Length: 397
Image (cartoon, rainbow, N blue to C red; front, side, top):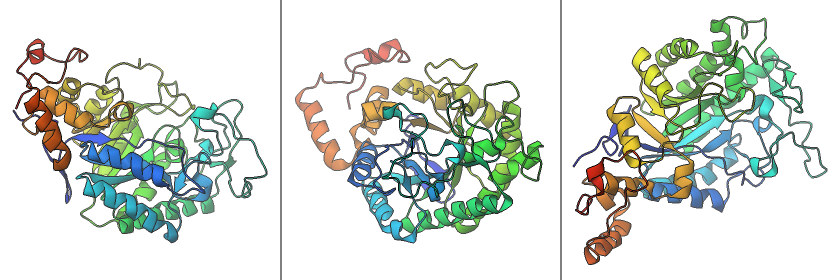
């Protein structure tokens, strides 16, 4: 049996072996804002588990763009080799390496989640505190208790555009084959888009066209240094989920502009402009943001990725079969089970079966299945599975 989940997808010159994406997941494990062996291990296991595209976590484009002390950045040419090592490992596992580029904006200088989030307090060991400037389109704090950012000058804006462009050039040199720009979840590029956080009165604020200008300028810079064969992806919060904020209709208009400027795919998320992890008006449940992806895809014709509590194999397959997205992205489910792609192939009865993983791993799993013929994947925990899939012979090769 062939499934949509395990069919290939071409984006420019890059061919993904399946439609499963390992989302960018912050590790808060950087040392002096550089990747460590932890990043190598974490991304390697996601790639070896069989995901077609594996994104490195949000990687900052300049020092003041860091959200926490554990962030990693790619603002120096000296960092390229460390990232090349990650790229080589991901590719050796059969996956396509991607990188997400980000600037925290007013979400800079914060504590990581495991420390309760909130504003970071100044300590003597943060030697470049003054250089860690909290900047944003307008001097509006993210929420009560957070610092009021400095409103960016036109010179600041140009510096950030150049920082994104330079970071993309380094990412290309490191070997990443897909580049994603993070314009969602209340980070800097989203802050420019949303009227909640952008009250500027110059060419970068006010009208929809002006608020979109920053992202389009960044896209133009990044696209100019990426080879034509490498795809560019943008992650958007398709709705802010609050009165007076960014709307789905705004997203439709923006996506058409992004596509015209060389963006190949939209990663469809939501919310975050006020720092909240949940979007007002959307209840967190299985695939709760897939409808946003479906709407963007339908209204613009631009390929999309669906994200948000995609957990089960049949659920992921149905998102693709129902044309709600071209790719499905998983995050916490891959933390729970890095081998989810292989497990999903077995549960769906796809002919790739164990071969979703590298052959050396597939060999031993096949041997185990032959030795114990009734050892088939359970579907009892998959509410999306058809009743007959749970039969004793459904997933055997």
